[in-house]
Length: 110
Length: 113
Image (cartoon, rainbow over all chains, first blue to last red; front, side, top):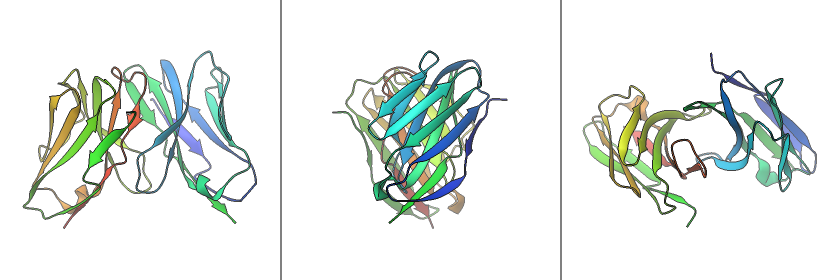
């Protein structure tokens, strides 16, 4: 069954700290993996998209990694800011479907 | 223009009303999508249009009726909705089906009373 599992479900960190979010998937055949940031009540905004051959991709303070062998991805956020508080969703394309993870809710405290 | 624009941003409707949600993009994308998202859940795919033809209907109740008048516009017509249909409705588009430039709109927050 095609699934995307994210951990942790939620996370609270202090402003300025780093954090790492995890995404494990069983989607097959694999095409690409995307990370989105979604503010409450708004649409998801793309952070990175990675294909099979890419191991790391950065977008400012966001760095995504992909291990296609173990079917795992991570999103590392450096020097967190209050505006990073949001839900982070991992989405995997498998064939003609996008499979969404349930998301990690991140709260950054001052 | 790199945006998907959804209107209205908020909508409150009664169970006997008829209303429409509108989605527009001018990026030359030929695939457009409707999603429904409940609080603290991931988006659920409802409909997919590819080259203005309905490509996927994920067994959505007939009280939701999509329409794609042209390659830039996607509407979702609503009729006789139930309170459980209250949700954030998201539109998305991409260059081709599930292809490059997959972009979401900001959504319409729908409340059915």
